[in-house]
Amino acid sequence: MNIANILARKGSMAVTVRPEQSIREALALLDRHNIGALIAVEGDRPVGILSERDIVREAAHNEKFFMRVVADLMTRDVITGQPHDDLPSVAHTMTERRIRHLPVVDKGRLIGMVSIGDVVKAQRDHYQGEVDTLQTQLLADERGRAI
Image (cartoon, rainbow, N blue to C red; front, side, top):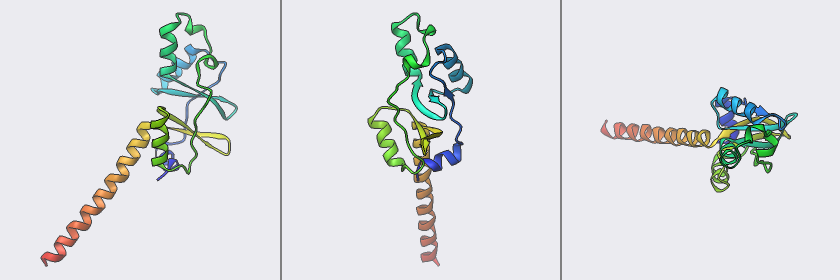
C-alpha cells in the first residue's frame, strides 16, 4: 500500500494558498475547508506549508500577525511525498519529523495531500483486511475438519 492508494480513495484535492495572501485569508480557507494545513504554491509547485500550529505560535507572540502574509509564517522546507511512497516509510517520516500533513508531488507538480490520519486509517483498514482474511481461513479449516 502506498500514497497513491490513499489519494485514490480520498481524492487528490489539496487546498492551496499563495505566499502573498494574508493570514486572514489563510484562516478563512482553513475554516471553510475544515482542514489543518494549507500548501503554499507558486504555480503548481509547493513552496511552503502553513499549518494551524504555525499560526497559533505567531499569534501567541505577535498581536499584529493578521497583517502578515502567508510567506512570513509558512514552513519553507517542505517535506513532500510521492505517489509510490509506501505507507510504513511515510508514517515513519511523519512521526520522526513531527509533521501531520504531507503534500504529494509527482514530476514536480502538487497532486494532493495526505494527513497522518489518512495514513493511520489506511494502515488500520489494511490490517483489518488481513485479520478478516485469516479469520475466514480459520473458519473454513475448522469446518473442513468437522465434516
